[in-house]
Image (tube, rainbow, N blue to C red; front, side, top):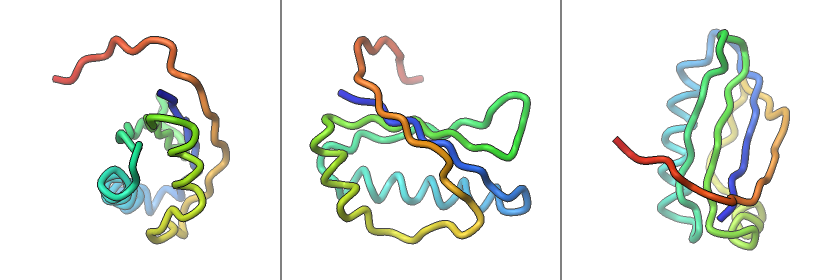
Length: 96
């Protein structure tokens, strides 16, 4: 398993729209791209104009296939600033 950390700078007035875009996009990706295991959107504390998502993928190969044809609309009021890929070593979180 891998984790992918995405960091966006989002225009303040469009943050709620960004959250909806991210939510719908994550559902679409999870249902249409093999190996996509979902994502968590986080808001840094203290609040800023950044949004951070942490996605889980089954493998680097699955992620590479997704990046070749991600589909879906871009969000015009956000700029992706960074992408970091990490190998998952241990996973101990639970779902409520």
